[in-house]
Amino acid sequence: LIFLAALAYSFHVIRLGRYAPTTSALRLAAAKASTEAIFSIALIAGLLTVGQSTSFGQEVTSFFDAFQNGAMTSQTIVPAVGSCLWTGWVTCAYTIYAQSYGQRSVSPSDANLIYASQPIFSSLFAYLLVGEVLGTYGYIGGALIAVAVLLITSQEQAEELSTNE
Image (cartoon, rainbow, N blue to C red; front, side):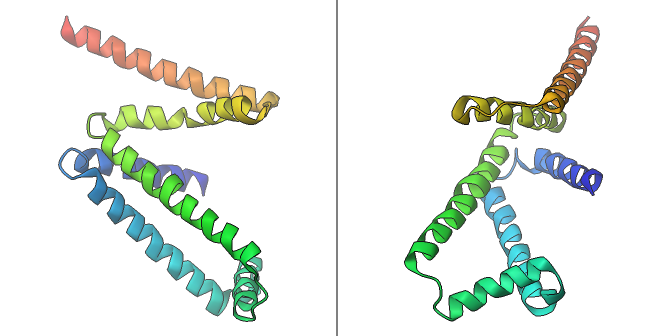
């Protein structure tokens, strides 16, 4: 499943590399966000209708039941709506826009290298902002990512130098 997700994301980056130079970043972001919203609504609808046998379906159903019965107060609803808006607008829509805008001038292979280093930056920000400390496996994983990025970029630089000579 993880391999399929990585493969799908790589195809997304390749296609974005094709369309980003010729299409506005706002249009690309709107198309991707709309598609994600449609699939999310379809998933919720599916969980409400046939998902009773799963824990996810039961959670969704109990949420909507509590909402309909008036069991939710503004103390529950306001933070939930705020979280949904933050997640939708900032962590999804803005990042889609920024990726579409940035990939106008970056090749898909370079973009994937940048995206592959995301766990390193996440760990760094987690350390700086909340004092989170990595365990042994975290350091090993970060080192493997850094080495892979360095190997690929040094190979690309060597190929560019040999081509220019």
